[in-house]
Image 1 (cartoon, rainbow, N blue to C red):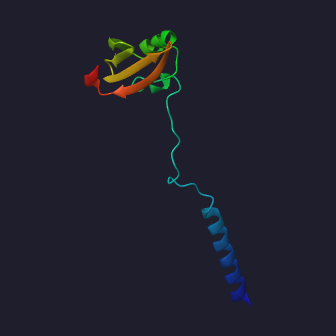
Image 2 (image 1 turned 90 degrees about the vertical axis):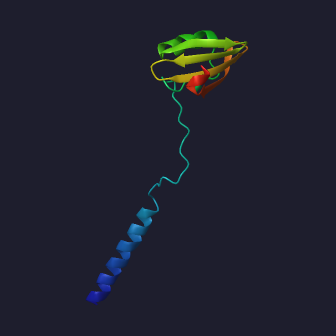
Image 3 (image 1 turned 120 degrees about the horizontal axis):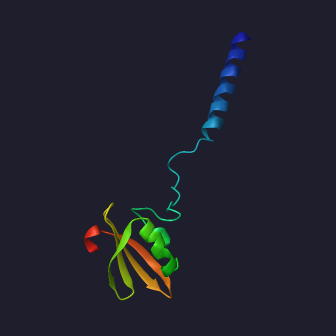
Length: 105
C-alpha cells in the first residue's frame, strides 16, 4: 500500500510537470516586428507615411543631414552613425523610407 501511494504521488507530480511544460513559451514563435516609434539614429524607417515638412525636423533631431536629392528622392545621412536613408516623397508625405548602405549618400 505504501509503494502504491508513492507511485501515485510520483505520477501526479509528473502530470503536473507535463502540464506546466505546455505553458512555457519558447523562442520558436515568430518574433514581433519591432520598429522604433519615432525613429533612431540608425533606422528611420518608422518615418514612412509622415508629413515631409514636419518629419524633416525629426530627422535633424536624430542627427541626419540632407546629403542630396534626385527629383522626389532625398538621401539623408547621419555622420555620427554612418547611417544613410533613401526617402521618396509623394503628395507631401514620405512614401517610402529605406535604410541603404552609407556609400549611397
